[in-house]
Length: 352
Image (cartoon, rainbow, N blue to C red; front, top):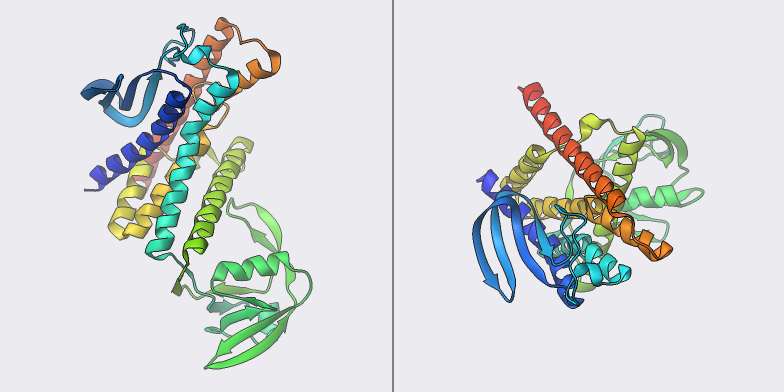
């Protein structure tokens, strides 16, 4: 069942990505020969409105084959008003960007759905208080519930951290304890900490950690839209930063996951709850959007880079340069996929 869920989720994400390219291409009058989910041998195909819609043997991706644009033949040129290569650089950039944009849009829709169904978050309930910390000295105790900080009402644990980090000076905490409201003034101090990438940082802290209790968020339609927007932006930023840290060597290459890891994560999420599955699907969708925007010639970002070059210099890269860079891009992409699979297999044997 987990494998079927993985293939369905992946196919859905690929379909949405390629649909972005397809709709943008058709908007600008470009003929689309093939819309394929998967690569390799054709398993099922049906022609509709001049496009062959097909499923192929290897379900790890997909493509739209436009007139005048073919990654397997980078030097391809086809004339006519309905050809990709006769469109302006800005129009081509719009067609290329539409795929990743569709992934970001899908993620926002999924996060909005989560908000409507019933999003949850860590409750502002204290689990532990570090000895000799500002919170400890102020008399904060385990199981205290933080109701308000200064004039800001608190509903989730994340809000506490945001206020502590982004506010200067002492803070007035309003604590609920044994049914009573207690006010405590706490002065955060700068402490050593680690961010999500395990880098050592300095951070304003008061020395508390969450209890692990969960609170259900009762969001209005407008609040659900804000929730979806913020989650999509946060996920996009996190993945962009993750790629940057990987290139810088801060994140080791052994952390790169492949299709096996993705499949396991989706399978585990599907067995947990619909919210977990939607959350993982949204995160992978953002991941696809971000990775496709990387300036690797085999990806949308690489093609956007070529078109930006043409837009700025008023001339196209030579066919030779275009071919060399595209082949190089495929080598880089293939190497990353092999690295991911190698790491996946290593994790399987290490866990065993």
